[in-house]
Length: 195
Image (cartoon, rainbow, N blue to C red; front, side, top):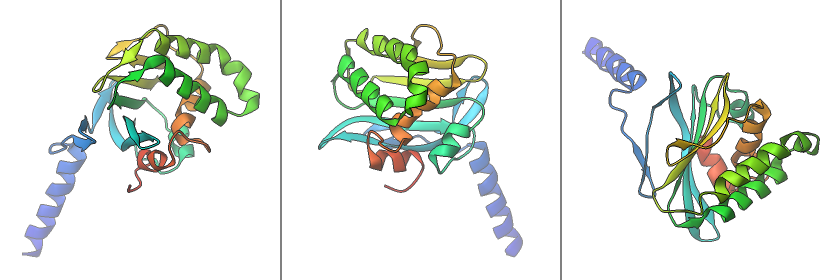
């Protein structure tokens, strides 16, 4: 009997590690995949949650890493590809979204880094301004690809040239993980803490 329990436990662990029965979770009606493949690497969902602005749901965010991270510092230091996925749950003016990201970017970036990152910030603003509106169910991703840089894709289409500076990806992640994040509850959820 003990052998059967051990075998069942071993098989359950193997199944989870291989992702055989991994099913997408749902956050506010949005399917969040786990795991995903990015640039030849299998990434696991670190955490996902909903961004609120006042009482309104704005988007579902999901962070993918090669291995779990429970602090912002671990997220920044993680090696290999990384992805932040954003899926809208309500219609939003892309320019407004870009402005709110820019504000959060500025609030969470140390002053000594800001001057180097301004060109990338302007380029990111242009990417969002070009979209006009994002509708419920539409998404964009922010990927860190070693050797390539930060790639922003809207509705699955990469936008412009990659941002080469590694610190630009980290500065973008501070929008959600920094000392003044977009949403404190979402920060915890992206770190895999219970809601």
